[in-house]
Image 1: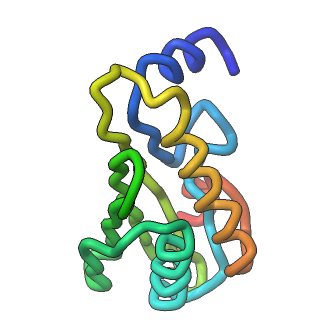
Image 2: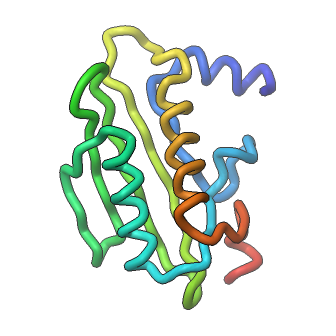
Image 3: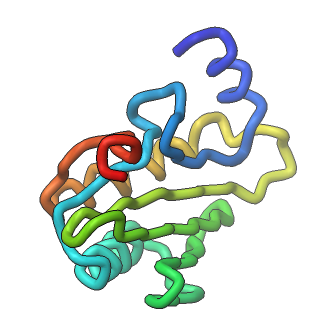
Amino acid sequence: MGFRDFIVFISSNRTETREAHQTEELKTRYYKASKENVMKAVEKVIKDQGFGIKRYELDRGEIVGNEKKGKKQLIVATVITVKPFKTAVDFSVSTDSILPSDFGKSRKVLLSFYQQLDKELSFIGTGLGDQLL
């Protein structure tokens, strides 16, 4: 973790993944599965982690969940089919806190979602957008 990442880490209550993230573990992940199967797996992972499903939109490829107890957290999962049976998953996790930082809780939650999802689906790689398009 570089100095810039550390500053963002201690001054943020939100963590999200993206295609070209500086941190390898926070890059978009790709799975060998259909959009429908990935959506089901993401829904299962969210529920298994103690979150409730607030909104499930298969057409848009979006699932919104919120934590039922403890610190209020909101998760948004975005699922996009890039090619047949090559599907991208991004997460955004934010923590509702009176403090300006959640001290890495949103990052830990996000990484635990990916770890469980890797067990549910066939993982292809991270940040593969340029190679697949």
